[in-house]
Image 1 (cartoon, helix red, strand yellow):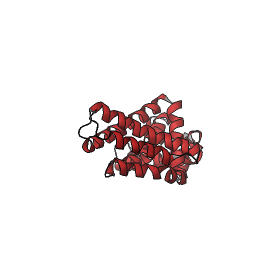
Image 2 (cartoon, one colour):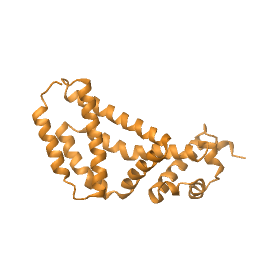
Image 3 (cartoon, helix red, strand yellow):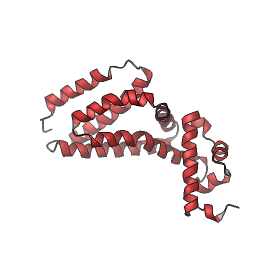
Image 4 (spheres, one colour):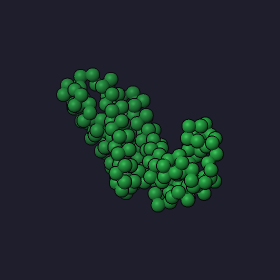
Length: 201
């Protein structure tokens, strides 16, 4: 029988749930989704496999919790940096540094790759990533609205979509091709800002 202190709504239960998610993320970094099994997570966490069903309803529920945590670890720091940039050009400067920095952070790169794999293979995980990307686009659009009050909602949404897609695309392409001309691409974007920054639509 499960200890009552491990109940999902208890403090100890919350800690146990957190431990299982953190363990799952660590296994995901090391072995990808095939390595995130009920047995592997329970053994690494030093707990009973039954607790995975108890806290998450089974392995699919645990996978979703791990996916959410991994998405937060990969996406949130990048979005936060962009939101804290002084203006669009400062954001482009940050974006220039992101590929090299991310490539040097192998655990994060591995997580990013596994997010794509998980989202394309499991529709439920795809919904999680879709919602997180929508949230990121919304935050970026709101930040842009403060910098470009003359822009329409459609333009703000469009630019926010391009920004998030550009980050994803640059990271993915850079992982495959380290000689990708990131600086040239972002310089072209900067030129477009110079040419069209004063447009109202």
